[in-house]
Amino acid sequence: MSKRLAQIKRWAIKQLKVLVVLLVLLFVAELALRLVGYSVPSLYTTDRDLAFSLRAGAEGWWRKEGEAYIKINSDGLRDREHDREKPPRTLRIAVLGDSWAEALQVPVEKTFWDVMRRKLSECENLPRGQQIEVINFGVSGYGTAQELIILRRKVWAYSPDIVLLAFNGGNDVKDNSRALKKEEMSPYFIYRDGALSLDSSFLNARGFHSPDSFLYKLSKKARDYSRLAQFIFDLPNVIRANEAARARQFGSGGEQSEVGLEIASYGPPVDPAWQDAWTLTETLVSLMHDEVLKRGAKFLVVTLNHTMEVYPDPRVREETIKRLGIADFSYPDKRMRALGERKGFEVLSLGPPLQTFAEQQNVFLHGFGRTPGVGHWNETGHAVGGEMMAQKICGLIK
Image 1 (cartoon, one colour):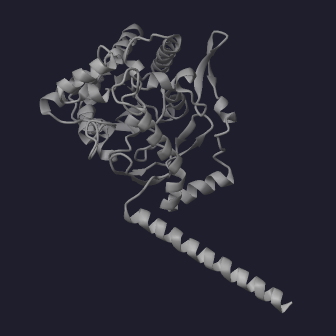
Image 2 (cartoon, helix red, strand yellow; image 1 turned 135 degrees about the vertical axis):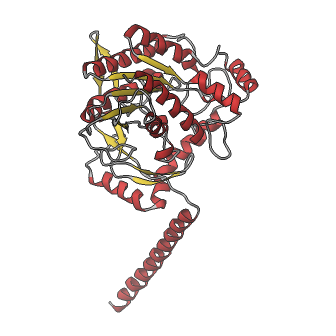
Image 3 (cartoon, helix red, strand yellow; image 1 turned 30 degrees about the vertical axis):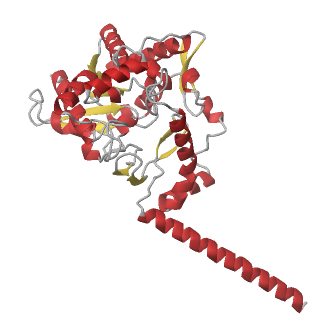
């Protein structure tokens, strides 16, 4: 009996040593990740209406592209806190969009929507004493379908006077189509019996986890407090991104010029899937416009630019256009302007004026650090874009 107890004791001591070593290694890994500044905060949660949304109260340093401390407000918006009830003598603007509006790459005060807010306070058409408030509803990965859903679910509770849709011609059209996006974890609008209806089949997809489940909440808490947990959960995303980068060749015919942008968006649709995607996108924008009008608000579509469209060196732009086999990057702008003319809403195309600014000033409006000219707007891009939007909205104020 004593021999058996001695064996158990030795086994327990051995397991304890293994546990101690493991804990030390985990501590060292956590410390090392913090020392090198690694941070990938868990900003999103699953959503029964939108598939995913920003997680109220989430915060942390974002360093994947640019650098900013991100705080998601109590209503799940990448913005400051806002009262639901609109203050007296306030012009309230709601901004809808994807990652360009979410703008994780820059601090809040550097985003185009906050630049726009400050610049609009100087508008000569603004009645004396009226304040400007801009509320950002942008979320990375959203297409027009999710933006219409969030308009209905969240935006109207804030009673905006103007709804600004930041339309990304590089990926919004694709994101609205199940056939093109090929992503199960997303809501889509589809035609059933000739009528447009919402397809929320993502709720039954294997990758959808209830936001109320214990394990899901535990995983979010772990990522809130541990850099190592962030690294482990983000590793599959890093692997997929690296594989996509190796497979992607910049400028090759029909390929993506950068993550998330489809070259097929920049020319007339040549196959039924793209034709249907454009028709659906125009229908969704039209529905959005109609709902805005019924609420007594104004609707403005701002078409964003392709990164190479505003590259400061015109020779690089021309060579890129030639390699891609397109006429230019203006097709989404032209198509959205034509829709605006038919439906009666304003469209601001940012590509041409931003191109002029970038070329004249010889500055990059996209990219950070070692990757100038690639990716999302940098602080300069946000500043110039925000000023242009403010000028446009100033003209809409009476």
